[in-house]
Image 1: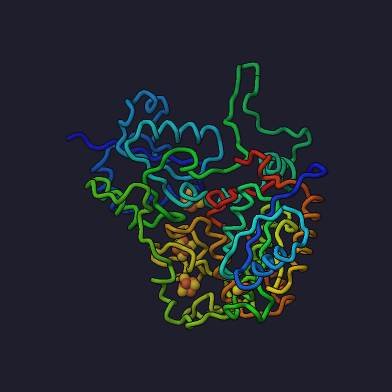
Image 2 (image 1 turned 60 degrees about the vertical axis):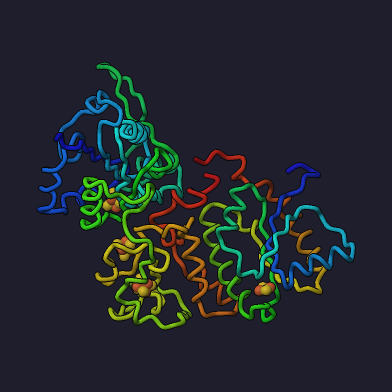
Length: 141
Length: 321
Ligand code: SF4
Ligand code: SF4
Ligand code: SF4
Ligand code: FES
């Protein structure tokens, strides 16, 4: 990845916490890299592993799934489900030759604008080190 | 009236699908009576050139089993497509990639190295590998090209219908042949069986609790399975919830969990991902460390979740190899 090139991150943010946290970061005018393309979902548990795989096939360098803190999910237990699904998705990811550092799960509440900025900044830095998504550049069929 | 002309062909397959045709037992006589077989390499002697000489669409139907792994298979699939009115993908390998498709976790180089060099029973000090062309004093010898990636039949040619299963059960084969002969086929692109999950018709379903909750994933060899109990309820991975029904619950009735050879139902794009989601919903553990441990306990997740469907999955193969 070139010096000033930004990775492309697809972020699935739950409406009730993480997306609200992102909005808070925005209205507080906090600075962060413009690397995240946010997609608002009703709950982090709405994120089907298919969405994650499709994002990579489409050339995303990283995928962030963010939801309410454990115990705080608007639908009570959605994020526990997300966590279990994420652990299994990571295994599949690894076996299919993709770097598990390209997917990240974070709990960000509606009041954590700063945390949102930190997560995106840190993830962006990590992805810069790992480099571009190899799927895009490789002929694999 | 002239009998409809039919071809059977095999690509990257184990021969089991050919056996499935023979397994029609007496019914095969009805088939042989009703059609005129023009190609069937496993059972009869025909030449490719006879097929090449035919007019386009002269064959009423070609049944093609096996995945596409070599240039010869690709050539024959394309030839049969041209010469046939209908093409039926016969069996899991052709339909979804099947067991040969699991080789998509490696590439040609790794496969050749393992098969022709590293296995204990191979002695190959000169490192001789199959070549597409070899010159010998008597002339030129050729072999088909071996591809890096296994493909399904419909990633190679247009397919009209799919007969699912590893191998397809005789009743579905007979239904398909009858439907073709009588011109009573469903919508093009259909999988010729039901479109509902195996669990719906599984005899063990009634033993399934309303809410499945497991604390551990177990291998079939680690438990004494109660033949009356749903496998998933016992913590044994069974792909029934993500698999299309219609097989007659063959594995379940033999006291084995389903491995998904019928593939997913119509709406599902990636069977492994779909099953993984449903599995995550029944693991009754919230502690983070414990979840990691359970995920680690799943041995060979690709072989388990994508046993028959890796080439037809979203990523199709392992990346970066
Ligand atoms: S579908 Fe099963 S029986 Fe048929 S060729 Fe493939 S592995 Fe063999
Ligand atoms: S999970 Fe398996 S054993 Fe249980 S009902 Fe479904 S198909 Fe039957
Ligand atoms: S139970 Fe599952 S693996 Fe067994 S034949 Fe039926 S669909 Fe195939
Ligand atoms: S609503 Fe935020 S994780 Fe469920």
